Image (tube, rainbow, N blue to C red; front, side, top):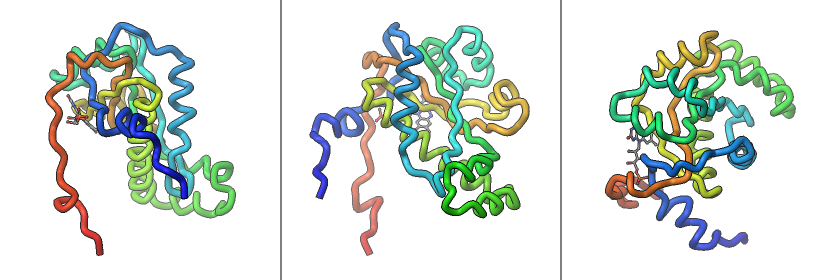
Length: 197
Ligand SMILES: Cc1cc2nc3c(=O)[nH]c(=O)nc-3n(C[C@H](O)[C@H](O)[C@H](O)COP(=O)(O)O)c2cc1C
């Protein structure tokens, strides 16, 4: 049976990991963004559907385009973050299924025939992949600050005008400055959350 990762790995990804609001001035280069994708892309999705799509908003010009969509409490930290990932999903993710899940070529048709099923599957798996992204970032030594406080319609209009990709949530990324962290919140107990049947 495989063994658990070392305690340090568990701390860095979960127990000691925090949501970051402030980052150092160190930039996040293209190689690091590639490394991040090449790690989290291996997380599982329904029928290997991989609906997540990303825009890494890094230039000052692109940040200015994002700014009007941010809720006021998210503006300063997002404008200051080295990178802000727009975690989106492709509403027509199933068009890649022939190559990504060749074992069941007919499945793409199920999604093509039901926008509701495609939306549910896209959002579910795109959200899962967004979670993988956050934990993968921590594993690589990056810090993440996820946010849902923004106007998705505005982001869609600005970044995805053809309507195919749809914004889900945002994640500020960089090298963490813990001076911006809020006090650690508690977590619900096992018995509040879990039933074993
Ligand atoms: C999907 C998602 C949306 C969030 N939205 C916001 C947000 O809009 N603004 C903000 O300041 N924090 C936001 N947060 C941060 C959470 O409040 C934070 O992750 C949580 O309290 C746990 O903090 P910890 O990781 O430091 O324990 C969001 C987190 C997630 C995962």
